[in-house]
Image 1 (cartoon, rainbow, N blue to C red):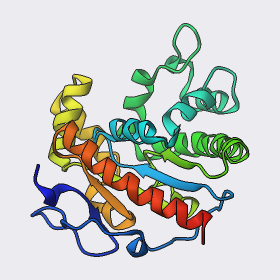
Image 2: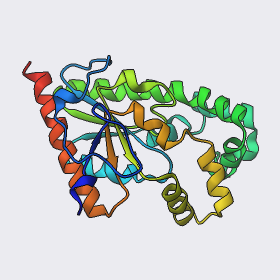
Image 3: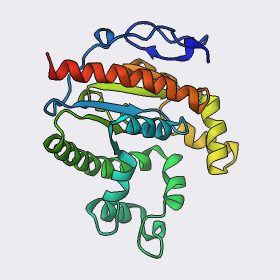
Amino acid sequence: MAIDRLLFSICVGPYTNQGFLSKIYKNELMKPIACVRSGNMLNVGLTGSIACGKSTVARMFAEKGAIHIDFDQLAHQVEEPDQPAWRQIVDYFGSAILNPDRTINRAQLGPLVFGDQEKRAKLNSIVHPEVFAAWHQCIERIRKAKPDAIVLSDVPLLIEAGMQSLVDVVVLVYVSPEEQIRRLMTRNGCSRKEAELRFASQMSIDDKISYAHIVIDNRGTVAETRIIVDQVWQELLERERAINNP
């Protein structure tokens, strides 16, 4: 594995098409941001874009000891039948989006929102407040049970939702846009046109780089990504120790 693919720190230098900077930068170069402090926990926001491998990276961090909060799971919970968000979604989009068991059929809902910015914004305005409330409840439970935890909040739309101020460190999982489309076609069994439509509905991953403290280059093998995660985990441990031993 080429060492120059290990880690890129936004706080130090610009991204280039030639690759990522080679040095593993220490925490003193990871500029602090205003955040909602939850005791002595380190609250890490993990984000990326569609088909970038974020879920794989999240599992690797969980194996290292991070407490993982999956926003997709929270979204599913708040959209369960008869929940407030479910009622608003059905009122707006109609009962045609429901399965026979009254759960939301995402295969039906997806095409309605991916190509329509107004409908997508409406869906987000319904779901996001409920998900954020559930997230804060999770954070509070973790704070009480393990106040010195490293919490990894896996948030697909962290940057789009303006959540940077709610976490201590923003970690971005990166693959190239073309690789995203290829992976999405393979994963979902969809056409290139369908993949490009979903891709176009999201903020470009290249545009997200400037918002991150750490960018994990996920263009290589799983083994290479695991080495990168090991390096980043050590950075997060150092930062957590700095919080608890100022």
